[in-house]
Image 1 (cartoon, rainbow, N blue to C red):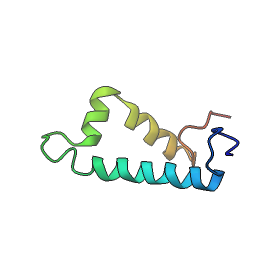
Image 2 (cartoon, helix red, strand yellow):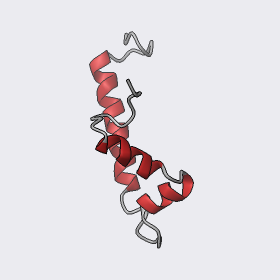
Image 3 (tube, rainbow, N blue to C red):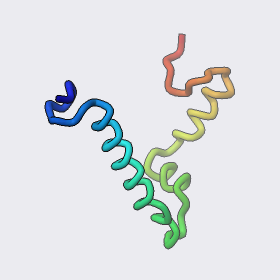
Amino acid sequence: MGRRTQNPLTDAQNDAVQQESRSAALDASFGAWKDREQDGANYVERMRPGLGHRLEARLLDGLTNPYQQDP
């Protein structure tokens, strides 16, 4: 039995099923923006104004991980 899910699948089998589910979700999402006038970057900017600029500034400050906390 898989220790994480308590189902009869082994961990390796469970991981394979999860990977297959993720791949299917990605395949289903391809082309989702093709009929929209706005691209994904502009959508994110509209939803979270300034996020791109803040992340870019952190990268320019030498942080390799833009989500890490300042020292």
